Length: 237
Image (tube, rainbow, N blue to C red; front, side, top):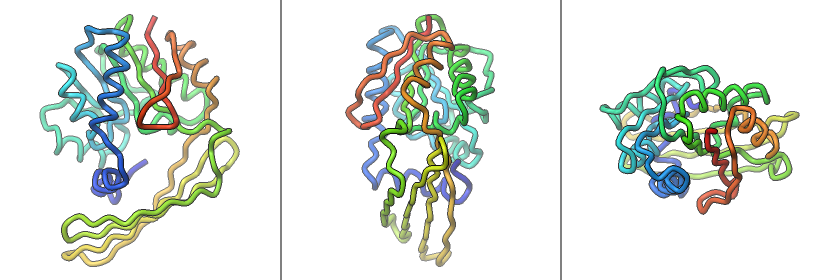
């Protein structure tokens, strides 16, 4: 989970790395409207800094966000002061209202934990969708596609701030463990560095499909233009 140190760097880093939040939101929107053309409301689960949610707001009349990270929600609130945002766990949140669509992008679903946690999260999604509503979920890598030992690195300048991000991924049983080290040089605050660890469950394709079906969805696994991981698109029965 992103903390207070990395949250302020999130948008700058990922945009510089080529992440196109507008295009990703548009593709998810197409997946929704292709299955329920009249969709007008959307909940973004694990909304982070609101970078996708900002663009969903141009496609839907009502949008809201949920995230477990307080620092990320604070960033989202600064970006989208009029959008309702809720601090909550995807496995247990209860807003007391339903939506036409739910999204959970950038592999956030893999933070859920074990198969029982994945099932619990999708049951929460179903509980917050009207019948015929659509859930769009971007998975993490399937076990056969994950590359242990993968390393990545980027250096980004934003004004008077220079940010370095390096990561190394390893496998521990059914989890992918990514350690990410940041170094920041800032004209006002000098030098700082810190490390975060992210643990993603390597769910199989059938794990996702079974969890969707068990939660009351008809589900498709479809290709996506922006990610080789594809998307799961479920329609609530």
